[in-house]
Length: 305
Image 1 (cartoon, rainbow, N blue to C red):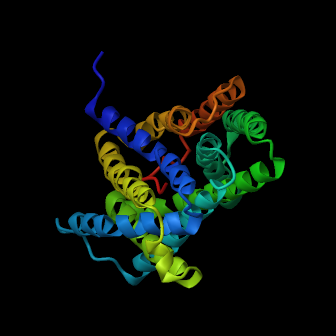
Image 2: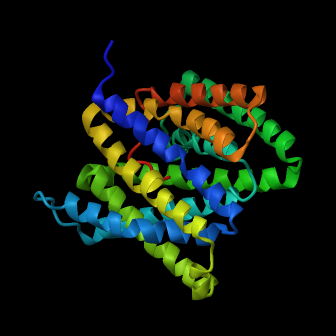
Image 3: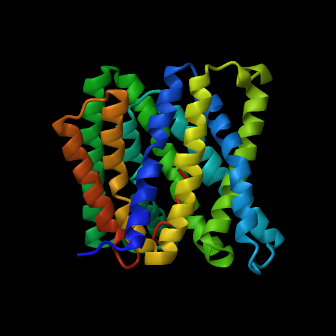
């Protein structure tokens, strides 16, 4: 049985995205903080994102209206800048493995938002998916508590990352129309560019400029790898995969992300893998996949991560 090229592209994108938390944790080992690591990542990614934005407009793409630009700025701020900031702050407290599992909950948040705001029924399957997902997260929290021994840190970090997940879910709900109007790759490049500008402004307002040049070389290397491997390349690959096999299949293949993060965190960061983590991950992925294949569920667009 042959695996399609689109599936390979989607799988590669998911694995690349899963490296983000690993690179963040590695920068922290060399003295970086959340705001500095995020700003360096986005500064390094911005030139590449601008090239992508330019390339995506070459073939007769329609110009954006003022309303389009307002939506791009708002969604870029909420879905890229704010969610990334919250995510990086959470990673100062919890393991990369737990962070990825919490982030993977975003389809369940999208379903809940759609139910509250648009009266879209979740159904029995959706309720079961929510139950599986959040039981899995509870089990994974137990594993992190055993690993760190710090209840306060796990709750604070988990809270930051869950807030990031909610922010990203709002972005997904609001981006559906924009993706249809201007294209997934173009929209992702524009919104991520907005995020990069916000990150630079945030850094400039809260850190002395000299701080940006005061880190060990390893920090800049990991931030560059994060910009390329965990940001720009997966954005391109995900957009291509959606074009080749469709967003629903890409979303399903994306379930490899948490598994990849768990394995990479064990290999590169020394995070232990216990049965609680395995069971928790299995429940979370089962719940998310269950809700993702519902006919009324909104498929994922190009992830922000």
